[in-house]
Image (cartoon, rainbow, N blue to C red; front, side, top):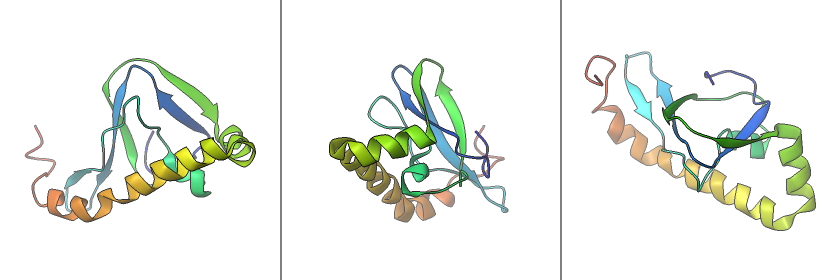
Length: 113
């Protein structure tokens, strides 16, 4: 998934590892997190975002469960425990923000090999 792509689906990894990254104008590559079995992709969809703010790179190929974004919203509305889990993912993902600024200084497109 590329940045600015529509968030049509949310993937729940079962045997795959992926990482959301952001490519900056300065050629810096910022890794936002690593997503495995404990998380989901397109976490921004849980709070109503229509497009991705990051590019998603598959780090270790494998399998993932896939839900339409509208199905995620329906499940959040009908299952309080699922809603709580999705909001916990949003909170955990948003906490990566402060650390990202320090990581940005260490990774550039030319040094990421």
